[in-house]
Image 1 (cartoon, helix red, strand yellow):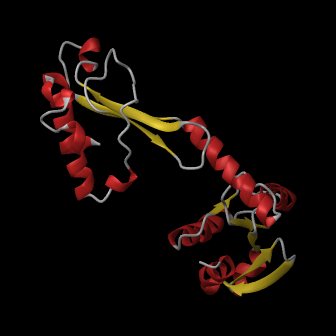
Image 2: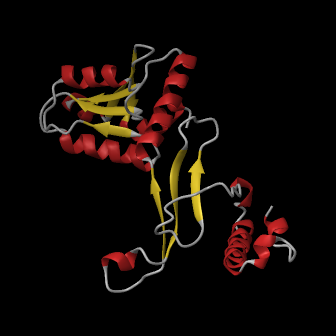
Length: 220
């Protein structure tokens, strides 16, 4: 389409303003092609946004299969900054429709939960690091950090001495699949307990092997 519009005999190519705009689009498309992104771009002449302040290319981002319209939009504005200051600053910006993005994510999660016949989760946490007894918060932090470094989504309670019932309740309510549990006696033996909530099993795992054991269970 762009090649057709830039033909010398095309009416738009004969108009100074539209010819300049088409030239800018040629440059943009050349950059996109060089970066391997041109395949995701659709040139839409019906697109219109903010005619009172956009001065160049405008764009919208959409997600295939999502019936929510655009999820992000923006463009070039050379005079907008000058409306609020004493100097014009050419700029390009984009805004993201965060509510629409969340709506799409929630819909996908509902579809997944229905397909797998599982509970719709409010968190992506895969492991809760829990403890029994007082003064073990630092150890919970240490184990959670080791899991994070291995690419495992983990969390631990913020309370210094959380109750076991509260920790287990959080796991069940949030649908967290695994729970790493330890107390003073486990630390003395250099082990932790790993609870598989769905399978209703509990295994003793050496602390040194915790990360590999968790990754195996999660298929990472």
